[in-house]
Image (cartoon, rainbow, N blue to C red; front, top):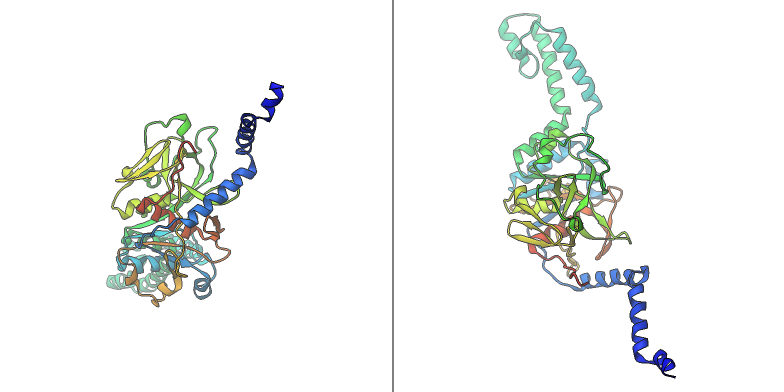
Length: 389
């Protein structure tokens, strides 16, 4: 009789319910409900986003007016010059410059320049390229001016068609342009790297004492990064890898990714760092719990992922200022608007990169996700999951 009473007692019911909840907590249903509850909590929370952040969108209007994507890189150079002249604090261009952009005509121009140099070895070096005609005329040689003018035109054509050089020169003049890199795989390495990384990329990494095994940042393999001509002129380079939950949504950002013995900060971290006049040496990992950027302490999960604060729109206005690339490029929007601003340039047009599911929208352009992340870092507005959770 006593045994029967136990099975009917409140104690048994409580133990049974506890076991059921414990088992269900690891099931898809409860975890899905937990993610939905988290998203509701994010939308219900209220914070004021940084007014220092401005987004320049590569949108449908810009594509229609400037031309099909990808654009010639002198377009990006002109935009960089516009923003630099307006004294923007930081210019972060989210476009991937992983391959040289060779105009088909440039290939032939370079071949003609090589042929010209070989066929006129008797001419001084000063006669090859811009200014050759006037230099040749001063020698008094009648046949030289025609050849020199030909070389001058070839040199001018090469200058006009080499848009990579134009963009690199623009980055160098600005001195505050940040670019993205990507890791093709977020998996542990099985051996040694295929090749060493270039110096311009290494200087954007963080070294630290070995991390505990239970507090390792995400590993990254097969990095893609800007071509040397552009990467060497970038003020900083950061990774643009997103972390997707099992439901495909982006709620966190890996602030550091581990590539063998080096740690590469995200582009958002580098943008915040640069806006505070800091360098990569001021980014310090607190393995398992946080990342320090100067005096800012960004709390994270054990893998150094930040739970980004996603700011809601208010009064039918977006959380961040968003302008069309073409409107800025054409002068419709005065560049003075971006004085002392952190300017993020990236695609929002359909078909130019995959949009992301976030707690506030099922289709957030990555450049806007980055805006939320940068503001979260600067305002220390991130969410923190307690260890007991």
